[in-house]
Length: 502
Ligand SMILES: Cc1cc2nc3c(=O)[nH]c(=O)nc-3n(C[C@H](O)[C@H](O)[C@H](O)COP(=O)(O)OP(=O)(O)OC[C@H]3O[C@@H](n4cnc5c(N)ncnc54)[C@H](O)[C@@H]3O)c2cc1C
Image 1 (cartoon, rainbow, N blue to C red):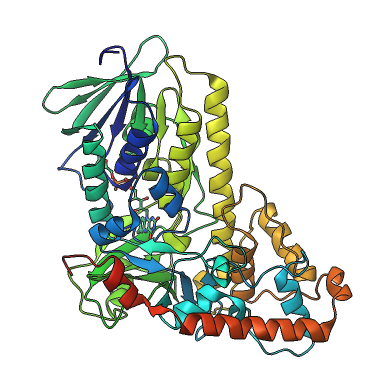
Image 2: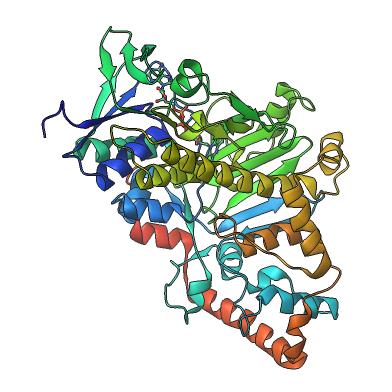
């Protein structure tokens, strides 16, 4: 097939989402039938602060043909075993949201129910005593998880911290090697077909015109195609997740990199600390209704562990999503599709979800409405489930400041109310098949934010208390022993994936 007969995919934007899309589709689709072009402009900066990820990124890497050790070296990456939340429930309190699971089910019954029964009968152990990831994180140890269900390491999982600028650069190199054509230039006009309003072409400042069959909008918050050209509309969720600004600043590394992200709540928002091999990423997400930019900057700068490597960079956003992420012949991926704050590192994951949905529903020259609808439904659902999980962190708090009081009193979605009510009653947690956050994540955050069940599931009464107690104690000890035998996170990186620029 010659180039004129191929189905032409045009990606607009070369940030994390543009290059992730180019890299994945150049590996997964047959380029005899498709051509892939990516347009980016050196005049328009990328956001480039997406630095923490969650475990499914490993599936993305593997499907996209990315070697993990090389990816770590090229992005200055470190391993992530979860997030440590400080001051979220109240000042001075902290908890950990680990990857992997808490313990293992006992005879098919959820592990946490047994822990709840022990706790309600005077037990003093913490949930985290049964999470291998949490124990590893606190000891700054690391080992990759195992797929053998009998191994303790099968209860663990991991993701990465990465330098987003280096990540995009690396993915660009891989994509170009696979035949993706890159065009440097600023798009100044978008031409729509008169017949159906589909995008016909984009025009560059240089007056070059690029036609396409499918346009993927990775142009960032502005949504150059999906919004500015197609006027798709935006669902605003600021009343549920009211933070609307962030300041980001890198700092010098201090000590050995932690294998986890830190999230520290402040008076009207929170701060992230993300350790990389060559520096630490920091940022303060806050709500402008309750805090000035100067105050936010001063809080951020006075809470850095190392010397700031520049001035804080301001970012503004409106939480929510496009009314349709696929509209006509345009699919929005990344910030152009929507944004929820990086509290649980979900943005890069949503890019991955969009790419996966695109590949499952890849259109031909004819665009079928049923495929668009399916894509939009899938993405809508993902956004809503993640939104509820993020709201939980804000809603369940005992802090005193006006921002936190208002979060506590906000009218949360019925779906979340129901989830909290179920947990409060007998600690039950049901998660839908498509929910990114599984039982253990909901458990970690509900427990960590101080939601305490009145009782536990009576189903577990058939299991003897003494025996279960001994089982829990030996499980905890086994996790400790397993962790002692592991290499430190620092040594693991030095041995397997040290960046040559550190
Ligand atoms: C404060 C903050 C913290 C974050 N932290 C995390 C995190 O820890 N984990 C996580 O998963 N995600 C995080 N994210 C989200 C993450 O940064 C984004 O999902 C990711 O960077 C994707 O951005 P993007 O590629 O969609 O857009 P951008 O990075 O904005 O890229 C837009 C691209 O479009 C191009 N472009 C725009 N207009 C034109 C034009 N007219 N002509 C040509 N090219 C054009 C630009 O040149 C650029 O290449 C965070 C976001 C913010 C705001």
